[in-house]
Image 1: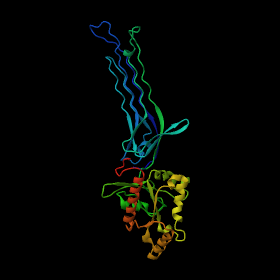
Image 2 (image 1 turned 90 degrees about the vertical axis):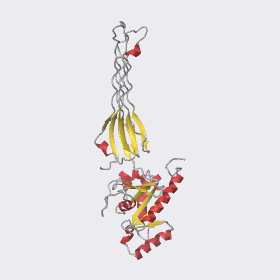
Image 3 (image 1 turned 45 degrees about the vertical axis):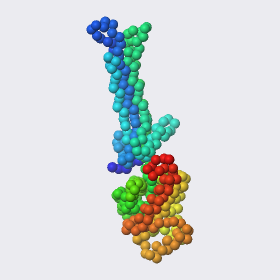
Length: 347
């Protein structure tokens, strides 16, 4: 299924059912009174976050989502059946915007599996004529109509919910790395923009703790302005606890070793200054492509700057375990700083 992280839909809650106009008709009750029942309430439109969904693809092909209307009431004070709610299941991390005359309004940010919100309430059912009997109105021949449902124009935007965001220029080896540390199997090829959508991988340690890693594609210089695929996918980095910035050793200049990293650091800062403040690990990949002398030269360049930089070859699985161990350590540190326990609850 194709990854889609944005969709526009129309939602309609159900209308309430018509109240009933009815009178008792019994053999030995010559003056039967009104017994019209109320109409049923219209169904609500509910958004629910579901952990095993990863895309909004289905809603590109189903742009109208409607709840069921309530049924009308009937005689003998029988109430109409309420309309069935329309539950719209979306991935965790989906934001729900309502389009109004004054612009868009964020009405929900679904960040937890199972989280629900009623976005459009169904109409109230109309009252039957039994409600309107009085000393001055013994035979009410009218009932209330049901309230109409609500129609709203909704835009859904998915921001991938991951602990770690993998950043890198095209062909940095992010997809190969995520395939080594998790069960994710992204497309891997030796040309730019092989990855056209975020890939999610889950790493589980010996204590059954989970680390969700997102490979964010399409980042190049000028990404914040829409060049490449960056403007489309930079928002998926916003929810990550920390970033792992991967740079191919082929893109490292020993005279200015941080230049390659600075390209994307600047893009993050221009897109959202808060992204640039996230904790970040720096990793040099593809060390198998250079000889020992070149590798030593690059290592020395970073040592002179006093920076912690990790070296690996994701293809040959050299140094991958060390990088993963550092990711776990940083993850546990950010969870602790964020006021959460290891089971994900907030202190």
